[in-house]
Image 1 (cartoon, rainbow, N blue to C red):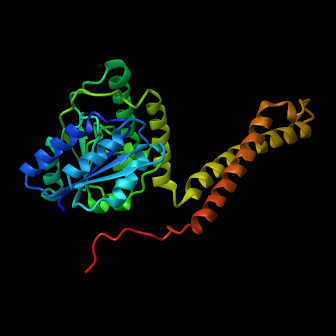
Image 2: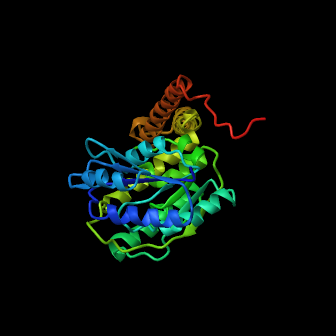
Length: 316
């Protein structure tokens, strides 16, 4: 199979028939064999009934319905588990992502050797202050932290080699960081393509401003997991040792200063009257706790099932 298209959806009853017709027209014209995996993430409208009806018209369609809303990452993870195409696409069900981009994005992966191609909505039709400005700030931060030079991490239209989606685990709200997860798994050939962005035709957006706050927190989480997930002592141990040394240095300074004052019979305040005493004590306590945290993290990591699981790309 040439192409798998994984489409998570929530209350998109009106757009589904038009979307499936559009996909079928583009891929049939391009003579590509394909499957469409629609994952209904707990819709409470007629989306599932629409999927059942469309299944009779499009035998390439597969449908999954969650009992409740689990989120986009869960829907994508489930779809990735079922995908069988050489190139796996993700796109939104709201008709804002154009299936016309699929043949060219597939060509970039198959012929140019990319592992991931991310769409870039260079011209957007979203509200300026509510979505476009926060999106620009978010993408700037994601580029700085991840080191991946993509302009649009939030774009739902992306293409992956099949082994990429089988190697990454998408959970929580990590769906926007699949390229970062892919890079962490060794798939470093990541590119992007300018794609057409459509105005929303039906329904309303399912995302609010809170997604940007969660997005920044998820970015920090995933960066930490990629860099220190299997070696937590490198972070916590280093920070703990540094803080302990700083605290110990302050304590030694106060102790030596007190000793010199006693030898020279210079009147002095109590050590506990100095702010440095409490700063040093707190630093040593926090340093010790961080070191213990890193040590416990190492124990957990050592006993993890995937500790020595590595992805082999080729073997002869």
